[in-house]
Length: 494
Image 1 (cartoon, rainbow, N blue to C red):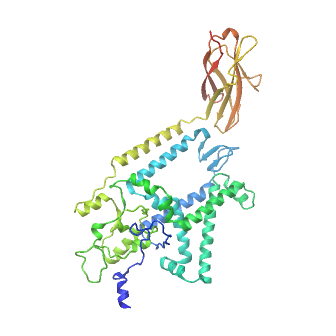
Image 2 (image 1 turned 60 degrees about the vertical axis):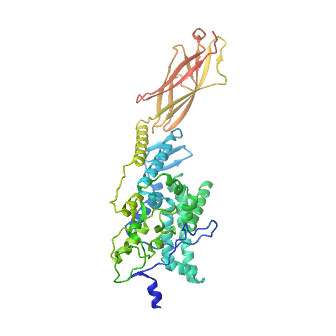
Image 3 (image 1 turned 180 degrees about the horizontal axis):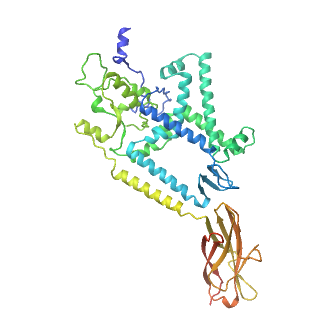
């Protein structure tokens, strides 16, 4: 018994964990049933940072739909809303129309460049802290730990025969998981409908069928991905682990085992010297806390999400055995080689790769901000009828038809004067116009209004097969104007 106790001690006061790297590349089989991972709760600054990021991310996701933003009478007052019915995307004071989808494209480009830059500087920091899969998996593991205990207790519970105690704990865990999953799916649909109204309608059966469909899909995927699949999503489903290898280099900071300090590893007995050996006592606590089931001491691995929980676990052990922290730390591959060669570390955050990403990010941001700052509240689009291409009148004159789309982005109704810049002989008729003010275009607030008009050239003015012209609308109150070039086709051949 005493012999077994000594064998399980990595150092005085430090018990060796029996955790094994279930995702080790050396032992992985192509077709192999998933081995359950029981990550141990880590304590330290990186675990605290992950708790903070998780709380902020979940708070933003669940609460944003309930924020209000006054946009005036008749406009939705939800701060963030994707309004398919009204064909708008609202983000606080920004209102995106369908023809402005390039703003969404710009945001996606910024997100990609930001991800590339973060990866080039700090490795897979997005995966380890802010990825939705990581955030919700952390939340589900927290619930699992509440009902079933930490690593060893969960393992014992799974191996135990079924009993009322085991059934109660399992039912409690899965019940809370389902509630979280339902809240996740429910919160998603709130971004597409008024949040307060949808919540009331959802539980009374009056919500749109699409609301129940998408809430059900998101509930199912959240429950499965965060509850059961977990690390498999990161390893097999997500393409980023493979893409990021091309986005990084040897000078990016990654969670790294300091081989120069740790080897040769092995248990350390009381009174023994640290000379001639490494600081790693092979306690396997870094493996026990890893949610991906890997051993960071095996080097850089596709499965590692850089969550840094192994750093917290190792630092805690180093404190207990009186050795310096940082055996596992954020470090560059280049510096690991420099340490082995007895050289001082070198950190180069400003290098070609990071500068390219940063400059590209800055340029796209500048273009986006310039476009937003120069946005107008008025747009005009003129389309000439092509069927028929033109109409020759009985008196020899020629008529063309046009469709004008006037987009009023302001939150108030506006009256515009229509001006035709071209041949002074043009005769203008707007269908449905007021006879007292035939060139006045009335457009309601936050609306697009279509106007049908006809331009006619009298026979004596028809001298060209095609004449350029410009439609101009001018706001009577503010003087804001918009133009749209077009042509007048007469069909003459002389």
